[in-house]
Amino acid sequence: MNNGNWRTAARWARMLRDRYRVIVQTHWDGSPCDAMVALHARKSADSVASWRERTPGRGLAVVLTGTDLYRDLPGSREAAASLDAADRIAVLQDDAHGLLAAPWREKADVIFQSAPLLRARSRPRDRLECVVAGHLREEKDPATLFEAMRRLPRTLPIRMRHFGAPNDAALAAGARELQDHDERYRYVGAVPRGLVRSALGASHLLVHPSVVEGGANVVVEAVTCGASVIASRISGNVGMLGPGYPGYFEARDASGLASLLVRAWEEPTFLRRLGAACRERRDLFRPEAEARAVRRLVQGLLA
View 1 (cartoon, rainbow, N blue to C red):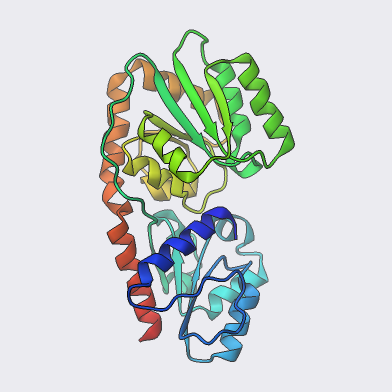
View 2: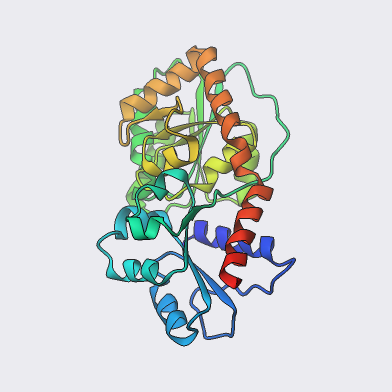
């Protein structure tokens, strides 16, 4: 599992432990259980197949990740077999539900991820504070961010802090080069999640240029701490923020991203529109809503 999947697994385990004994594993080791919730259809395929063979009749749910939805399906036989075997399927954002083949869609539920609401904080008025949170890798498309920063007029006070591990050497070099030539951009590197959330709470915008997402938890964290979002128009983001959200740019469009950043600084009414649109989605991302959905899923598996 990647870090996002691990965070989901740990959060769901906490939501269930008041009424169930929960075991979190990367692969099922044969421990006796009454139900299984498998994150990632392809990577968990061996565990799913073993569970179905060794525990016939016991409940099985498969949670689809972005890699499942936008890379593995429909071509991966392993991922498809996991979905065929599942009693229930969970997706993490609205748009994913419509991407499933009809037999899978009939047993699928949307469970939005969550984060606690943070008290609103004042933001600076003399500059636009922005955060990017995502490891430096192709799926997160930091190269589009770098190019957008180069296209911004140097006179605009738009400050960008970039959090994430340097997973790709070439992209990490690009981040350091941009930092050396533009004092408005700072590559911070990998830090604990709490520090990222604190930075979001003090910022006007999360900038989210990904080209592949299953339903990014950082969007949830931004919305629930009062930051607005500028994001690529991809399924994973549209499913989180809604099809009518006003802060999209086309994926890999550096010029479009730069234009939205300029607009957010120069048009206060646009920034307020983004904030209002994010607040409309906030109740979807409350921990109590996620907990109810997760418990309902498990209860159905045990029925």
